[in-house]
Length: 138
Image 1: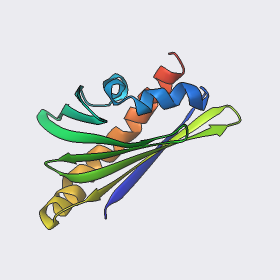
Image 2: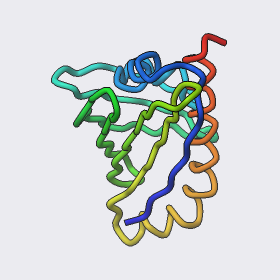
Image 3: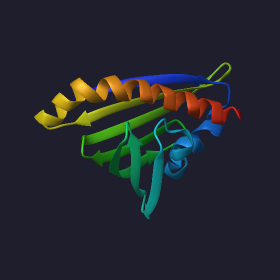
């Protein structure tokens, strides 16, 4: 199962960061790619993102949201993905981690290694950095 991780330190406390992650409709505020989010009810959403000129639509399900963790299951043309966010207190605020792991077909796995990983891993880091700036009120 392919996966990648990123993390960022935030000078805001976990209780200020967690709502930005748990409320999927707010992901458009800090996503690296332009993102539209449509709530469907029962923790389900339909998203549309534009990445490198290509629109990618996804079905998103909020699986778990606690003060220290938010888990999303996402299905799009590139595969089935699990996004696990961890939010931990630090001496100066919070550390937010994000692990994205995929359940992919052989063709999707090839696409992942050749295209998605080099593009999406840095994008994931930029998203977390934007999340940090918003949580810090910048």
